[in-house]
Length: 302
Ligand SMILES: C[S@@+](CC[C@H](N)C(=O)[O-])C[C@H]1O[C@@H](n2cnc3c(N)ncnc32)[C@H](O)[C@@H]1O
Image (tube, rainbow, N blue to C red):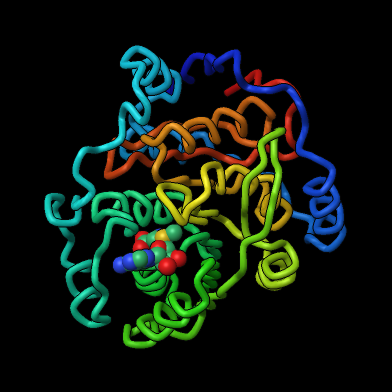
């Protein structure tokens, strides 16, 4: 029997407001063109994701961060985790073949394993990724291994040269050309009353829409940590990209052991965009949830 976790205790600081007008306009425009999809909620899949990957409850992580009461309390001391975590044979081969070099910006090997595991559990065939890199290579390989040539992967990155570099690396793998890596500028953005920068909607919405709907949204960009990143840069991503996701699409967010990303998931949950499944204690912290369709006013069954 599947036991649902208790409702998430959301900090009082989470505002009650809906996304701002600009985002709403983008959402409405995009909704007009997004295809209709049926609900595909699967309790057994959710239970498996919780049991094998997203093993921490969001409310427990929030409580822990509050108890420690220090900025980025849960953030790992060393970001050279790619040296410390175990690598799968697949990841080793991908890196050897493509020539990819890990950096502090990379998803860690354990995080990549968690993301591809989730993709396998839900049988994802179409993935939208924000923030390209080794995760793009691993997703392209995983999709090929599971789905042959029947898949699509769209990755968006704020650095056009880096997007081209990763696209070139994808081409060195034994995968069909079912991937696109797009360089997109960032522009001022606002979500849940917070001003930040995010991908320029004029760049990304037409592109993302061309391959919708997606089974999974993997958020590891825009850069949100130290300069030149913008705190809360990932906050607008769910309201902006949700029209391109399937009902109940799985959403993962990396770096949730950083306060800004932890706050982002609180806003998404509190404003009814996302139903949390949990947090995976890998790398820099990986949140896993499902899109709520339509957005719920009160997150009463999370
Ligand atoms: C937001 S991160 C996403 C990482 C990706 N998901 C992965 O697993 O590798 C990608 C950004 O990091 C930046 N980046 C990657 N490697 C870098 C490096 N060695 N030095 C500076 N910036 C780097 C790129 O410019 C790119 O815009």
